[in-house]
Length: 143
Image 1 (cartoon, rainbow, N blue to C red):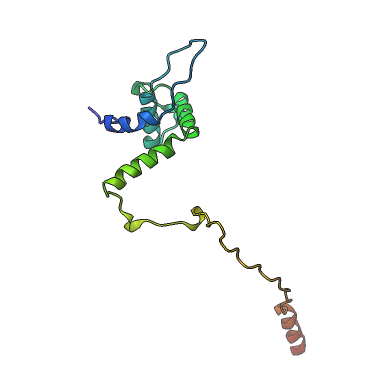
Image 2 (cartoon, helix red, strand yellow):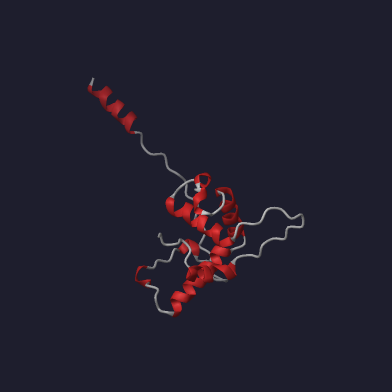
C-alpha cells in the first residue's frame, strides 16, 4: 500500500490552522473533507499534473474543488501560519541549519529613521567624438 500524502502527524498540525466550514443556509451537497482536499492539492503539486486531470480514484474530489480550497486557504493565510508553526517546532528542536541561510536585502525593511541616500548630482552628458567621421577625414587625406 502506498504511503499517504497527508500523514496523521501532518494533519494534526494543519487541521487547527484551517478556517471553519462556511455555513450553507440552503443546504446543498456535502462538502469534501479538508483532509481529502489537502491530499488532492498535494497530489497535483507533487505530480505536476493539471488540476483538471486529478484522478477521481484518489478520492480527493475534483481538481476544481481542490484548486478553490487552495485559493481560499491562501487568502486565509493558512500557508503562512503553517510555515511559522513548522519553523517554530524545528527551532525548538535546534533542527534548523543556518549554515546555508541567506538574507536578501530586498526582503528586509529599513529601520525607522534610517538615513536616506544622498541625492545624485546631475551631470551634463558630453558628446563623444565620432569614430566614423575621424576615419572619413583620415581616408579623404590619403586619397
